Length: 496
Ligand code: BES
Ligand code: MN
Ligand code: ZN
Image (tube, rainbow, N blue to C red):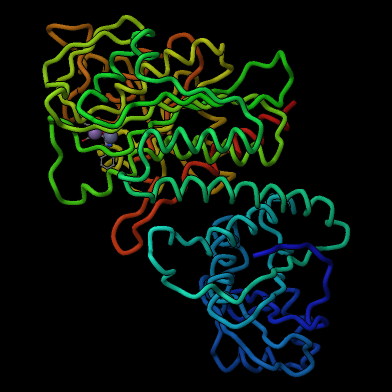
């Protein structure tokens, strides 16, 4: 699907469909008013019949409207005018594209991007439109022998904007498409099954990305990790026949002297739990346990495509977590790269074990900030559900910056506590500390574990266990938190 930007008068162009909004209580938007006049009150009459009340998420397709050059007119419910904010904006774009994709229209003009949304400017509105449209038409069909559905006829979408907004809208469009490409990469990687998306596959994808965007890439093998003393990472890989990889990508388009932002993504390509084996129901969803890694690759793709003037390093510890004759056993004690010893009381708390060595490895980049992204705990899903990601940080300004980026991108997070008192739950009789802290506050104690390896830099941790994918009928990766991370970096780039 192609997008373009044009100053268009609604009703004058021979397009496949003209899309205009209707507010709750049957109030016409500006574009709808113009169409209504051109059609001598046709829209008003249809609306007054009660077929379109303007509820958010609703739509009504009209054909051959008199006086209108396009073959169709799509009325789009916007909800109450006073409540038309970011969420409603994205929602109605999604509705529009979903409806359009089911019709025979090859092209459409959208008169929604023009509508004011709180304090958000035209750049934001176009960016979100392009992104929401691409997200709505995402399909994952690479594992089907034949595509399940016929491709929609919709080829071209024109976003109507005021003439004076054209330039900023163009920038929003290219940013929105870059973001959509990053989200789409993260979703593909998440949706691929564990027998395809292995640590080696992730490394291969990183190499491809590096080649395409001229990033520096480095893949550490088992022997390299042994030399570095990454024994907690290696302890997770011990039961698997798939070799672990530590993937490092460097994107440096910012000033040479500027310290980089380091993104660390959990890349467990399948989490069986190891010897502390998980129960069978829904275990297939543990193919999504590399979503943190996918979000790092997706964000780097978006940022590189935007050519953002920032320095970003991506670090991905990638491994499977399997039971087996060589697997780590509950009670085993290993020495992490940092020198701290860990008693592994539960082999299913493996995410923290691979992240801690990756966090120690991040020290060598002298980071401005480190953000790790992980499908870390079921406890975080219990605490926050599937709406927001859990955020922890050792620096309040950094936490606020991450939260704001999430708000702006419609990819929210919620700040959870890291009080010292929780650290006691990790006490061990035999090693420096244990890898689990009991049932209470499981998401917090997981973050406490990581905090012991992040003393040397500003650090934020996103637990995306509840937000990275959907279960049930709509099972599939969401691509979160690529929007949050990308917005964070866009904001950092524009601050300079
Ligand atoms: N990958 C899981 C976390 C997870 C579970 C995410 C379910 C989404 C849905 C992680 O490795 C894990 O197994 N965590 C354990 C930790 C526990 C053993 C302390 C958990 O949450 O049960
Ligand atoms: Mn686990
Ligand atoms: Zn896991």
